[in-house]
Length: 87
Image (cartoon, rainbow, N blue to C red; front, side, top):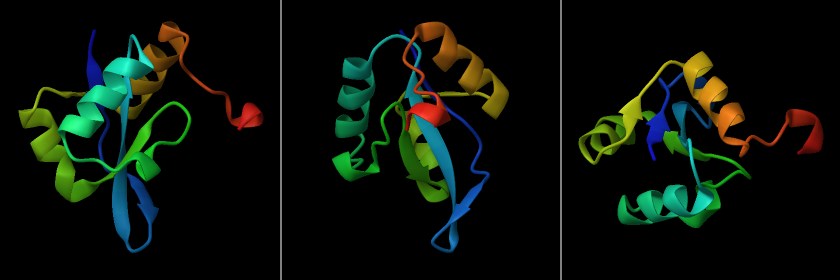
């Protein structure tokens, strides 16, 4: 079981954002996010959107840094990925 975080590449609201996902279960993802103080409103069906200034702290707390392609590959392999067409 691993929680993954990609680089902050996604601009929104004047900031850059990363995605936080689990490669095994949403329960693991929600527990990690809660322990890290990430609000529930940041959850978007299969991931949390997290601002760039939290990324280093998430890594310190155990999130594994990966590239965006690796994050999506592992999310798909886990069966947790919600396709954009299904959003």
